[in-house]
Every structure is written in C-alpha cells, then in structure tokens.
Image 1 (cartoon, one colour):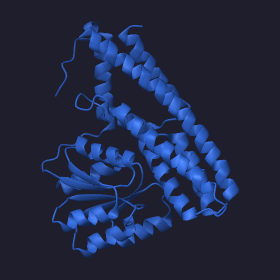
Image 2 (image 1 turned 45 degrees about the horizontal axis):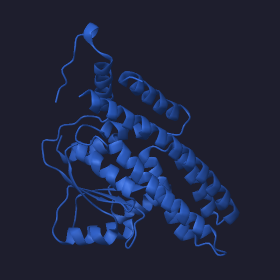
Image 3 (image 1 turned 180 degrees about the vertical axis):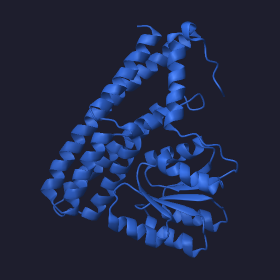
Image 4 (image 1 turned 30 degrees about the vertical axis):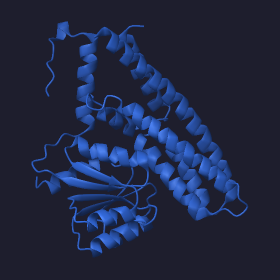
Length: 148
Length: 156
C-alpha cells in the first residue's frame, strides 16, 4: 500500500473511532501536539495511558474482591482512571468510569462490580483500536523513512 | 515556521495532507504569542494527565515543572521557586489538593491557581475555591480554558 493510501486509512480509522464515540475531540488535540520535535508523542501517550489504566483496573478489581470494600480508596482509583481517560479523549471509557463512581458513591458493591465489567470491556475495545492505530502510524513512519 | 504552499494544481497528496494537518493543528491549538516568559507548576498524581498538561503548556511556550503529590509541591515552592501559574489536581497522594492549596496560599503565594478534577460537582467546586484556587475546571485541561488564563498572565 502506498504512503497516501496508508495515511487515508489511518485518517478514516481515527474518524471511525470518533463516530463510534470511542474517542472524542480531546484526542484530536493530542494529535495536534505531535510535531517534528515530538514525532512519537501520540504513541508515547497511548502507551503511558494503557499501562496506567491496566494497573488501575487491576487495583479496582482487587479492591472489589474484599468483603469490606474500602470505597474511599476505590474513589481515588476511579478518579484517576476517569481523569486520564478524559485527558486522552477516551470518551466511552470516561463515561463508564462515571457509572462506577456513582455506584461507589452509593456504596453499592454489586453496582460497582457491574460498572467494572463495563469499564473492562470498554478498555479492551479501546486498547485493540489503539494497537491498530499505532500499527498504521508505524507503517507510515517506516514508509516515509524508506522514501527519504 | 511557515510551510511553503505549492500551487493548487501541483499540490501532491502528501502536501495536502501536511497542510491540512497544520491547519487542523492551528484550529485546535488556539495560537497565542506570549510576550513574557511564563512558568507553571503542574501538580497531578496521574502520569498521563501530568504529561499532557505539561506538554500543552509547553506548546504555548510556558516553562513547566511537574510533581505528582501535594507534599512535593509544597517543598518545591518552599524552596523559593516561583511560578506564574499552578495547576493542581484535587485528588493527590500524600497531601491532597485541597490541603496543598491551603498551605500554598498560607505561604503567601498569590499566583494564579487553577484547580482541576476528574469528577466535578458543585460541592467539589466550592471546596476547591474555598481552599484558594482561582479557577476550577473538570479535566481535561484544554485550550479553551487555558488560553484566556495565559493571556491574562501575559498582560494581553
């Protein structure tokens, strides 16, 4: 596939993520921050976000496994995940976090477990799509490098 | 750096892509030119948020430092480092954002403070403003909120 076609494929793929509500405009702003001084910025931020998100989801899972849930501890994890989700533009994941926050506020363990399931699903979807996006970006960079 | 635009009928797909991207960037990151050298401290326990907040500030020419907890923020300010702007998350480890804000103000620091949080409600807003922040926003930090603050700090 030639360079222009790959770039079009990437653009359309990202657009589809916006249309599905997986990403919102905040991600466009992150893309806009990538330039020649930060050529791998998007990949670095995605990697950072995914590492943190997985760690937090595991911690939330662990917390909800206890008979007596420490909801204030849970709150701070949810806050962190919602914050990073909204900062990277992960719209559906951010909304799923709001569900967990509400259940946690209500001290509703069952509700929290259901909300965590949704968060896990949304995160897995997002991670798959990010992996595909980064694969396209790397292919573009490789082609551009070969053409120089 | 202003890109050299090719004439319309000679523009390659790549040129169109690059120019489109630049226009898109300009649209998204409202351009301002700062006349003064501004400095900012970002206090955010979440690495992704802190990196993005610092880079957004940096893209406007603001020199930034970042710490991930309230205690380190207090220590840095107590060491004499001055900032034009402090961006501080409400939920922090070691020393939370509310208490850190109070202590920063008690130290006589009068710079602009922007409180950020992932989960905003009226009670959070009131608490953070009462603690001493000047502005309170829900994450993400975006140009729409940041640019007017930077213009004000720059005397524009």
